[in-house]
Image (cartoon, rainbow, N blue to C red; front, side, top):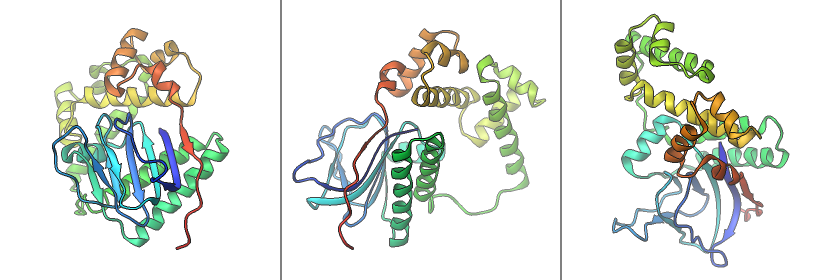
Length: 272
């Protein structure tokens, strides 16, 4: 879910970046200059500048811009796909130097998101989700091996993805692991092995993520009560839902919901 978006030129001389703690995943792309994060409460060395960064939530930092006026695109998302999350958390932060044609890709993504935010129709969340996928693929373009998968690897992927799809379809029922395994005609131990081979996580970790992704989407895109959201995502009680949600996102669901998707008005880019 997109939580914040900004695209255009910002004068950091008049409005410096004073942020210190960000709640969401942040993608930032600068179109003319590199940028680097500063960790004011951390002795780690200054990161080299790059024009594309992905930063995890709950990390204290602000941005150091070498120029006063910078054309940039900023996207904040509540969650990111697991391959990117794994890479960023392993590295602590992710950076790439995008080529000119890749910067054009980002411009197209930002333009689409900007238009979707202006319209805010029923398709806007899908366009935001597509932007997240496109940005993730751009980040991982040179990180994932291109070798073809074996037949065995494909079979593992098919079974695990079917298990997740089945769980998602029956989410409101709060299915147990035994029920998921039975639906696939597998033993629980075999299902666990498949998940560890494919996701490098337990089924519970993956299913908890599915529940929270669904809950966050309902909170962001509907007026459903907390009781209704908890019920539709398989939690036994609102108390249990609030506890798990706060642990994952850092804020209770009602407070998190009040931080609406925000966007600063786009400022025309300078002539290139």
